[in-house]
Image 1: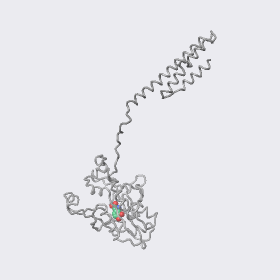
Image 2: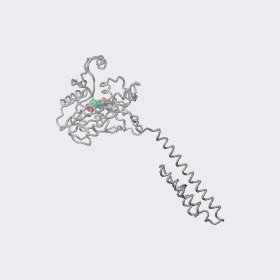
Image 3: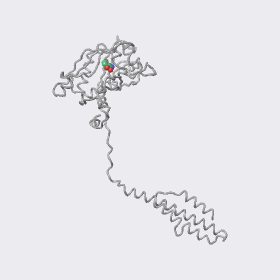
Image 4: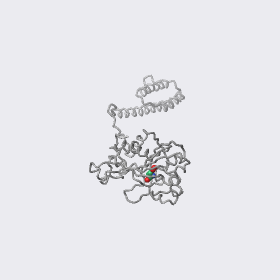
Length: 338
Ligand code: DAH
């Protein structure tokens, strides 16, 4: 008998449920007319007198515990019912606002898509770069004054490592690993220590283009850039001004004819109608030699542009700081662009 009570207590401890019917079944099982507790009381009279006192206490203890358990379970059920009564599952949900792409990424993707159509694919390189890929192999030996064109962040622990100052380093990485024909675009972050005003930024984005094959000519370069400007800006009148970059020969800076129709056109072109958009040139034979490509057999062209500058032109953004201020009112204006 006492054994039985122990078993009931065990079962009682283990029992739990969040269903009303199950709690009710449990209640009937113990406290119902033909339930366990009543059954035990019926057996009480058969217990020898000297055991009656202890047996009685045990039945009462069991009953108390059953009552307590049922009380706890029912309370839990009631509060759950209350929560569910308050929730209206038929109401429409709170809409979660979708984010939008950053304008720099929007324009980067546009540029990639334009060049994809003529066979360019995307290549990546590290932002922490060694001297060879960022400078030396690009025909900028140590102590060459051209290194001063880009103020460099050096890595303190290893002066051979820098934060890349341009995406041109990817030209070298790709040329080292691949053989012509090569047609790549390489977008990414670049870093310069241009501490000249609070407006200047130490990080910005560039996109690099490189085409190396047999018989690549300056005419190919010009045609490609004309195709590019007409696709991106809807303007195909360009001019190429002679310039200097160590890794191209000849080198040029490219202006697009923006027009002089509105006041803004006057302002952004300083009254000339022309806007500078990128640097370019024919890959210097020294660069090809540095990556073991025969410059007598192959030639190529390259170009590089700052993405922020292009975005500012396209969307008439007046201040480069807007790109990093994360003002949601700016970002939201690009929610329909990809
Ligand atoms: N790397 C140059 C810069 O950061 C841009 C550039 C100019 C890239 C001419 C080129 C190029 O590939 O041919 O100012």
